[in-house]
Image 1 (tube, rainbow, N blue to C red):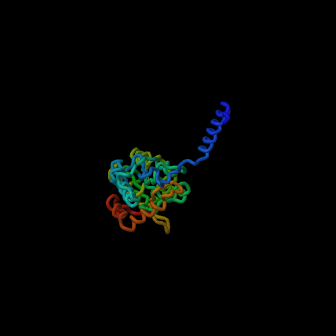
Image 2: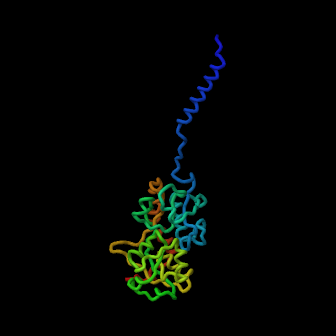
Image 3: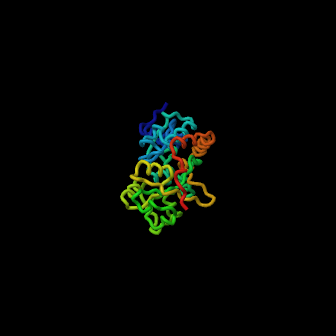
Length: 278
């Protein structure tokens, strides 16, 4: 039996190692089969901070508040126990921007719009609301009885929201809509007299005028365009999410069995106290 020269043995070993590395590089990495951000958990996004009446005391994990309660009801429909829900925080704009998400769904009173659907998916609506003009007793807007009375005033809202769109489209003030980064910033501007009134959704209007603002006043609801309903809030998911159909089915089941109405009755005020402006 002949003996292999030493250099030949080394070459053979190196060749085998090269083949092994090549095969490893060509072998596809193991793919996750989970539809969720974290396997076995439901990751839900909300604002930082999250406000009453949507979330009580900025603690969504408590399940207290309209949207916190909705989130846990959806989680239950999807088969998740409360302890398997994980909360993350995002800005309003971050959640509806294109790209990957760190949540399975997000809820921050997102109105379902065609423009936003270009970047994200929505569930079916879990709540429908109107836009409301609010002010303080010291403001020139306090005596407004119609949309015409508002046109010469300074009226603001959080930018990128349907409240801001409502100012531009339904009030069309002569000075244009005044833009703010958040409802908090708009509220501070109203308190300081920088603006005469602000526009928010109906439940937020009841909270701000009843709790946050000194001598807060609801001027009235903005009318709906002919044939249109109010703003519909939907859960936001990543564009093309494999969970969209399941989350929508969960929301639909909660609507059909009366749970959405029960949660709304628990946490949200009655619209009858806000007149519609003409």
